Length: 280
Image 1 (spheres, rainbow, N blue to C red):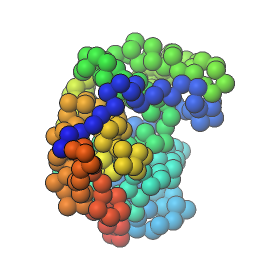
Image 2 (cartoon, rainbow, N blue to C red):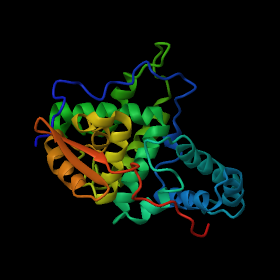
Image 3 (cartoon, helix red, strand yellow):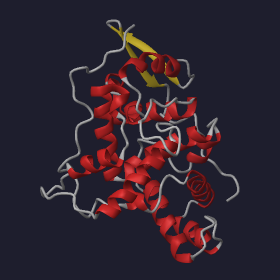
């Protein structure tokens, strides 16, 4: 069976003129992935199932190890926003600790949490979509994360009323630093000094989450446009091997129509991750 791709489709499309000024922020200048703290917050919520209680514990007990109450609240707002806005596309926050427990490396955990960041932050999603296009058009040479390249992409962003991106240069520079930090954590940049990206390796757990995300977004046709794989910078030539790995998992089943491969979850998309009920 073969894997059909939408080769002529410029996908993902630009998010230009999609978001209002109220929806777009520069939150990435203040809070990157913060993998360990995000995992702590997910465990707190999975244990208490009440955001009011979680916020109180986070701030009063300084579970994020920040030095001031104000900075603690800022980190809480940024991280909890990523979790509160998530829909069925990704594992629920009650399942997330179980998902992270199944990750084999810190990079795996970062790749999972990165998808929650994308769902919450329109400007990050815009930039990632632009880089996905660049990867498709120019190969890994398109994964150039120099500040000037990031600045040009942001300069091309338009709000839904047609107005231009207009943050100060210093703010844009800090945002670029935040984006590069995220790219390092998910394996696109391999060092603090690196500016040229590469295709990251996907561990078993982030591959399952990215595949489930793609299925939830596009349904039966997801293999022709696996958006989760694309967001993790997996070029088309990698898709056959990724599909084979997914098909080997007991929670996914393969079928074929007219020789075309289909993959779908056996039950609920994230049944492989049990809700977590450990200590908060």
